[in-house]
Length: 326
Image (cartoon, rainbow, N blue to C red; front, side, top):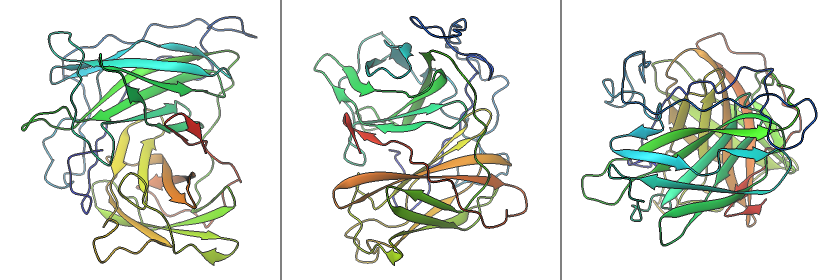
């Protein structure tokens, strides 16, 4: 998903302008207690006021790199979201196009982690998370079915690298509104154990501002370690972190990869990560076992004393891959 090596760290942090405050929902179609839709912020090229991607001063040699994904347009490419509004609880075809500086649809991409483009959809209260893999038509239009369970504001992240020898990885963001009655949810309390689909995943290691740390996630089922994880998108696990409040985005690649002679297929998956700042983050781990993809979610705090060991509620973020729900 990024151009960095799988054994290293690729973090891109970005801050999206809020499309609405918590306590506001989006009126799309007929809904109970609808709220007024607000237009998404216009794309712009002004970097003034953007936060640093790494205020701590060190994340793999990118100290001066501006925070990516802050805009709907960057480096001559624009995320053209043709479906900016959906209705909560209704399956909808989400369509979008990546356009170049001349407004032409991009039809050639570099394949990274088995895909030309990866799509993340997350609610602004971080209660809902989707890792999607849309399909591209010959004219450059991407599409994927999506069913968002709750009304409110969402952010769509497109992670891709255009074709070309000198092309660089980009993460573009756009606002998505889901209509209906909206009740905001607070992030779950910090925890280091998550349960999903009968699996238990334990998180160990620090997420520290400006300082790289190793995160280890251990997968078990029915009390027994899972030692036969299957590759998913070229790795045994994928980890995405979103900062509560502004949805700053971290994409972290695992340490090692299947077939390298050193990385075991479980039960432990290792990542190296640096938080762009102190704060509360939601971590989403995707892993595959017995042919199905599962997602384990955690809440962690960076830049504060470790929380007491807690067990997360038995909630399962829905994972959708190529239109199929797992």
